[in-house]
Image (tube, rainbow, N blue to C red; front, side):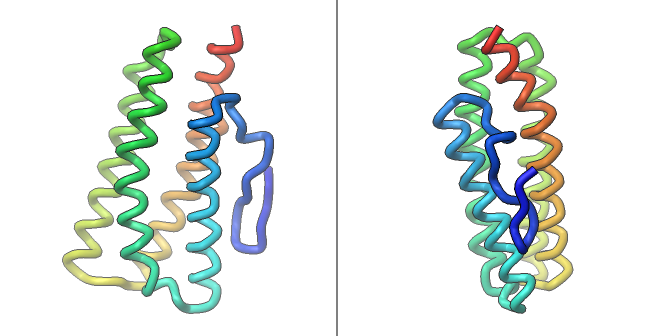
Length: 137
């Protein structure tokens, strides 16, 4: 697994072999690194709104692109995978609502960072790799 000073970094191990999906995943890794740097230097409150906006847009577009790929290749576990996407999107919406209600807090920023990192590692390495393996068969 790739490492950066601030958390995880993109490496070939995360590649699925689809340029669009891989580029979107790389962008999410960059976001995680930016959040990590902001938490380390104390500017995390300033970028939380930007991060949440990005996550909302990211989940909508990326999940649509990835689900389209699954349908095009006949991925047999589409419904379960889509449910995982829906759950993550609901988490992001919940964090946006929390931000709008309470503003930027260190706790919220830390939670967002942990949620995104956990999702990146688990979802890409476990779930998205299954799609890649299916397509390669």
